[in-house]
Amino acid sequence: MLTRADLEAREAATLAPWATLSRDSRGRTYPEAESATRTAFQKDRDRVLHTTAFRRLEAKTQVFLNAAGQGDHYRTRLTHTLEVQQVARSVALSLGLNETLAETVALAHDLGHPPFGHAGERVLNGLMAGHGGFDHNAQACRIVTRLEDRYPDFPGLNLTLDTLDGLNKHERAGIGMPSLEAQVVDAADALAYTAHDLDDGLRSGLIVPGQLAGLSLWDELRGRTGLSGEVERDRRTLHRELLGWLLMDLTRASDAAIAASGVRSPGEVRALPARVVTYSAPVYAQLREMKGFLRENLYRHWQVERQVEQATRVTEGLFRAFVARPSMLPPRPRARAEACGLERAVCDHIAGMTDRYALETWRSVAASA
Image (cartoon, rainbow, N blue to C red):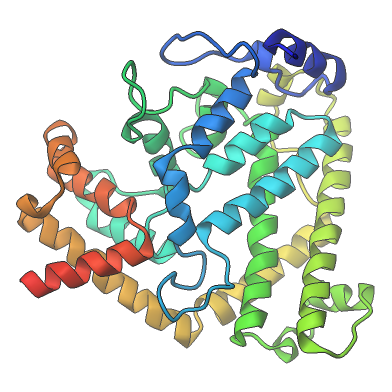
């Protein structure tokens, strides 16, 4: 049986000098004994996987509303998270980084997303304008440090400070540059949603191949791929080729940038003036062009905008109803209101809902009005 010490020694012997080692973890907010057979980052990963917030991602919007009649084959926030995990783990392994830390940050990075995706986030941020706002990255940190209630000795999950640092997208003054593992997750996030949102857009028919002609990434992708002329088979082929191409470019460009930076330790990474996990300049430009296309032609498609309007009505309606009548809140958020304020407690409650639960709750609340 391998002990934690064995696993830590294996990391030290096999990972790159600039990787974050489990044995050098900065510890936890609340001191506790580490596992005898898992590294600190493996323990973090397992804690994230067993959260209620992680399970709820199964029924939260990526692009298409997760509700009856909307289709079962489109990505949800959970499948997006798993695709980010896969990309992050692959890149981290190729670069000699701590794949478990990268995997953990990837699994936790979207825990704070509310129902209805970015539409729900925009609405909650507006409603909370006078109460600290709402941001899904900050909410992910709030979930793992406060809201998950699984342990009697501390709030949240008591994750290592290294994992928490990977989730902290803002307020980095005094912290320095994110670890290379956290940088990998950010890049993997962008890679995954660009590839799978394009795939879902084509699957849904809201985007057709003719619209994509002239986009540099699409034209090069078609040139790399032998197509059969059968629409579904070609869509799958293109998605598979796109993932492989972007993964390879990200890995090669990052490897070269890390070497050119001259870093020899995680501490030197934090002192860098800019991120070094990156794409090549041509691919970065192609990705930016594709993201702009998706923003205008998929995320703002009239059928998606109808879902955004529905999400806006439901989210606003629930928030105003709960603030006006806190007695409609379940016991736990009602009790939390005494500690953090009514608006924040209502926001936490709504942000934790799945799409389906939010829709069902709104129907119930509206019927009782």
